[in-house]
Amino acid sequence: MLHCDFNPAGHTNPQNRESVSVMTNPVVAIACLIVGSSLLAGCNDKAPAVADTPPEVSIVRVQEESFTVVRELPGRIAPVRVAEVRPRVSGIIVGRLFRQGSDVEAGDALYEIDPRPFEVEVKAQEAAQAKAEAVLDQASRQANRIEMLASQHVASTAENEKAVGAKRQAEADLAARKAEVARAKLNLDYATIRAPIKGRIGAALVSEGALVTANDTTNLATIRQLDPIYADFTQSVGDLNKLRAALESGELEEVSENAAKVRLVVDGRAYPLDGKLLFSEAKVDASTGQVTLRGEFPNPNGELLPGMYVRVMIEQGIDKDAIAVPEQAVQRTANGGSEVFVVKPDGRVAKQSIRTTDLQGGRWLVSEGLKSGDQVVVEGFQKFVAGDRVRPVSMDDTKVSDAASSASFN
Image 1: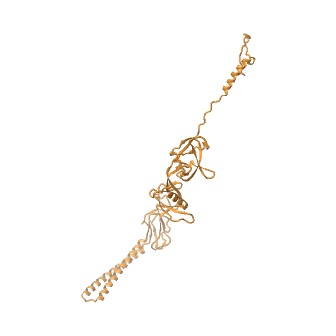
Image 2 (image 1 turned 45 degrees about the vertical axis):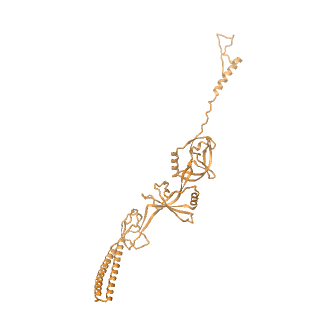
Image 3 (image 1 turned 90 degrees about the vertical axis):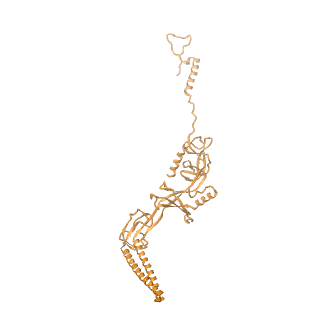
């Protein structure tokens, strides 16, 4: 309750001064009401409102750039060479000379067949050769004598011809014996079974004491050459035709043979060494509609093994005026389309429908919907809705690259 102390003129009591209610005097009451209203109004005043600041969002300004079109295709690792070790002579295995699963060089001894029968055969053929040499020597001497006598008209022409024929027969017999000696030595050499190629040898399929037969269908071990190594992969004939059409129309430029690279993704990580494309199959698999391609890769550490499943990244063309946006900028619509948020010149955000083609290196290649200079929102989607005003901040290029790299292998 607001009160005012007042002593009306002419009614002062010096011995007993009391407070008089303001309501006893109309003029004073009005004055007090005016003062009280001013005080109450001052108490109810609010602080002036602060203008809302637009939220900050990260954007990238898209630009036309040269973009290499890369196809990611499924593939399998295959050895460059495969050799099945087989015996070339028959006999008993007396020794295994390699460690299973090890790398061998061409010519390394792998198995030893009992050599004694072949050594005996060599000696027998060498003896037959010596006998043929003696017969030839005798026939040569006889032919020379008959020729001399015939020149003196002591021996007849028939005897001379007979002696010459005997000499030639002895020469032929000696040549046959030499061939037999060579065959016997070759069989002796075959008693040591050697690696036909360089590579990694697998399990030993026979052990010491086993009888092997020449040209048997059962191999003794298998050697696979792993460095370099092949990656066989397939591409649909439809995609191949689209690529050819884009190259013919000029939409894409052909990658030169020397510049083309083939890369591998193994178990979700990039293989560190690039390969080269060897060929594209000239026929289409009727059951799958796929075309087979083959790439060759260095494999010095033996990391790639035959039969491994890999993803093959193959360069197939260059788009000179491509537009690409980070993967996290693209939103999926309910009907399966794609869209991005674009910051317009007035600072407001708008949805923009786009058409994407390939996801490469964590970035979508955009064929329709964007033009050079558009500001595409990359981060901060939770801060606005379409139509709001925002404050765009350019996203650091390194940050975009790191995010793209992380997205491409996760």
